[in-house]
Length: 127
Length: 127
DNA sequence: AAAAATATACGAAACTTTTCGTAATAAAAG
DNA sequence: CTTTTATTACGAAAAGTTTCGTATATTTTT
Figure 1 (cartoon, rainbow over the protein chains, first blue to last red):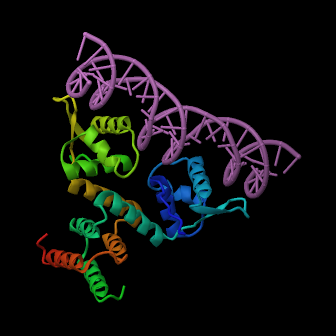
Figure 2 (figure 1 turned 90 degrees about the vertical axis):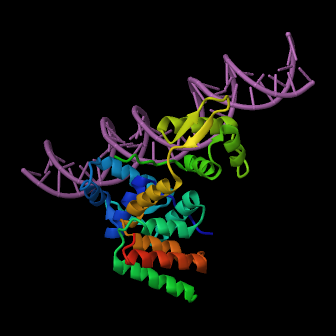
Figure 3 (figure 1 turned 30 degrees about the vertical axis):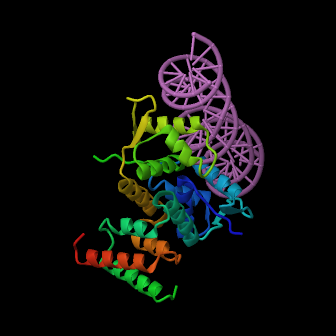
């Protein structure tokens, strides 16, 4: 049985920082957050504590500055969030979703090529 | 300047019914919702009133049973939700998102073909 | 006409999310 | 050693979401 995760917006923002930088302290995460907006230190701390309680991250308390690790892989979480949106907004049609995603003209030629080659691979059944 | 919308889960569920069936009364929407789960009539009513207040739907009050219309197109809303997820979870990389979406093996051959032809069109610059 | 059914309005409870203040404790600097 | 700084713990406020009960009004049925 596979645990599912549905991080809130603020939680996802923190998760992305941990994925990007590896296990981090509250101070490190809060500093990174504050590059984009103003967030109080205890706000970040509280969020991490809640996330730990929810089982989204784990706190290593061996040092005074606790180190927080993500308990879900980035890919896995992206996949789940995408699947939730797929069901909730697109009625399960990946085709509609993909076409919306590509339709904005912001995907480069080389990326489009990569996608095409993935599709070819899928069509050949090499999952 | 373009209004953005971020319906909650419950709101999105209602929006989808209105998109699918056209302008509807509370009764109609509540009946459809109750095919999947138990929801009180006044719960649905309240949600629609809140959505009206937020500007997500408009209530036509000329009849006793008010008729609610979606104020955002399905495509437009899907696009916005997808873009929000793209930024929040995929750091803006449509390629990663699309590959996640297609990677689950649930997209049919014919749909994959359609996507490929869209990509070809994009590559030819016919937006 | 009276009773029953149907509709909206409204308040509010229960829960979640986000934010921060304050207190207690530990470490570092003076 | 005393003061300052840094850290966690905790409570709680404020806002948002979801749910429903009750009151009131209108329509339909009997």
